[in-house]
Length: 137
Image (cartoon, rainbow, N blue to C red):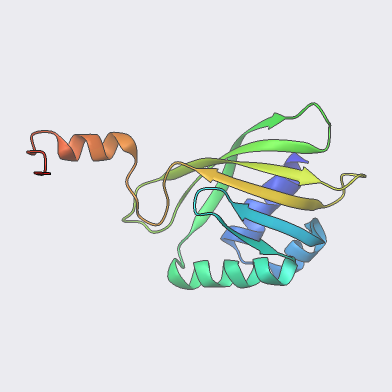
């Protein structure tokens, strides 16, 4: 499972490798962004999404940095981090990956993250707001 998750982040999201996507993703895969409340269904929709993201952020890279398997043996949590550009802060999050019955393909990805698309992390926002007057209501 960890190998497929690494391939998902490094080969599919970072390198836009459609051949790898078709080898590790189930045809009926569902990709749900739990923060933005949007989703994609099927390999082609996910590849279109990846192309759009890579067009906007050609330097994007994402990698899994830690794993937490679930009790069912068919899903795994992956902590990830990445950069959208060399001028945006590091983003981090956790995805839940679910696999088919024989654990040969990813059937679902639920995306959770702390920040994205140039959004600054909590600590960075806190530092920048120190000393600023609160906005009047």
